[in-house]
Length: 315
Image (cartoon, rainbow, N blue to C red; front, top):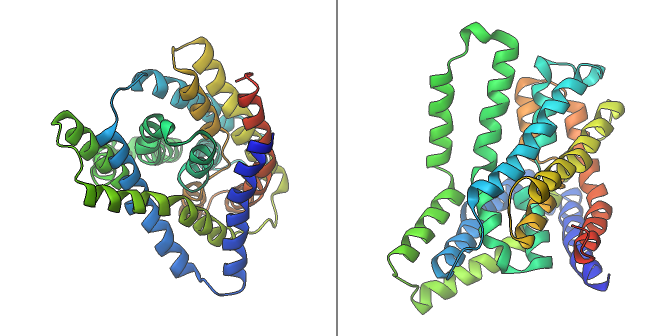
């Protein structure tokens, strides 16, 4: 239990620091966005590149991991779409925004720091496999969901597919994984100087991600749509990890550590991209905004419980 406390408290402590800096106007929204871009486009890709380029073997199949994680996500997504029809604050565009809020977890700024702090660098491969396609696949799915619900006749799968390909081709995390994999296959290795630079960038990723998350949370509020907010939190932080756990344990074959990564990532609260999707379309914004802010607060408790269950061997 002490290991969990020393994992969770520093993580959420840095989130509080970022929140406090934003509220005190020491760091504004522009600076917070800059930190977030650094995390997504530099620090995490550097960590994944360095890890993949230097790893010796891989003990799990990406398809099995994707089936477990994204299969569980799809089940939660469909459930959210159904439930949204019965909740006034969520009943818009066929439930696209609620489904996005249920599926899109805060993996980069919260899940990754938590996982690395508790399990170490050994989770880099499954972490990268999920993280690399998480945002593009969910943006594509949410856009497809919304457009089919609103106007199926005018929807173009070709245009949406091209958008997805552009997102994948310009995703720094994917490029970092691919570059690291290419370097490993060719046996290039890493010179001590760039290796040390990459290590320094990697080390900077966790604290800056957490501070950036705290800064971003200062912009959210909990006003209105409380019922919808709690529905989204329950779907995201209870239903989705339960679905992923069932698939990971009983449908596919995965190493125990990979199962833990999949379930931990599935249990992360709603991420900022879900809010951006809701805000861009002006649909279910209060409920999604509240799910991001309040869900992140709840995660300090739920993550502690989840990590304890993992360490005790129940997951």
